[in-house]
Length: 281
Ligand SMILES: [Zn+2]
Ligand SMILES: [Zn+2]
Image 1 (cartoon, rainbow, N blue to C red):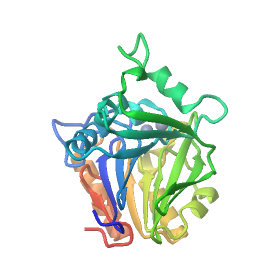
Image 2: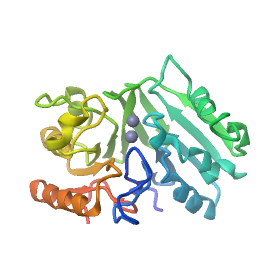
Image 3: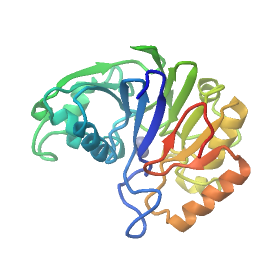
């Protein structure tokens, strides 16, 4: 990968449960995990079940280092963490970051609380990578080095969640999940956070027509994502966090409707590759 390359790959686009309606899905069944390459740097956003195949691919190459940023610790966003192969591989260096529990629990405590009896057989002591846990407060700007800046934003989600904006060589990629909007009242903090972004991946668990039935669940709609991206002058919009009961027939229909409404937009699919600043293929 060239030093200037900025490449995002989706390894898990499903929300809530790593399951699909039907035996397979062209959108995939894995829960949230995105790989963001900024030159030689590897960033992983969320550790849903999609981080298992990502980890397998990483350890098949040269050992290196990664930074894993968690939006929050609901199961669908961390269930792949204990199975992320670089953590079990000598020669790898990892940093795990979170900010949604700032002041309540550190990232290290959160992972230890997840990987413990009687829910899991071994604790994080089983990891043999050179691993550090880092904490931040939502709103902080993190200088990740090598010209990468990571901005953070607290989202409206039960227990908290953090949105990320990764900036590299004049381009920007945002992940905004999980978050609940107020109908008719665009989230001003999100609007300024995603302003002018090249790519926005946004919580699109529902459609507007379903939204009222899920008030308080902490999620949003694909139409709200399109409205926010339009209002903020963002370019690519990727609708993300598909609910497991959504069939491919339903999701393909939403994808077609979204493309008609906003041509440089797509529903997220596993293995989708996104180049911020370029046209979607
Ligand atoms: Zn979720
Ligand atoms: Zn959640």
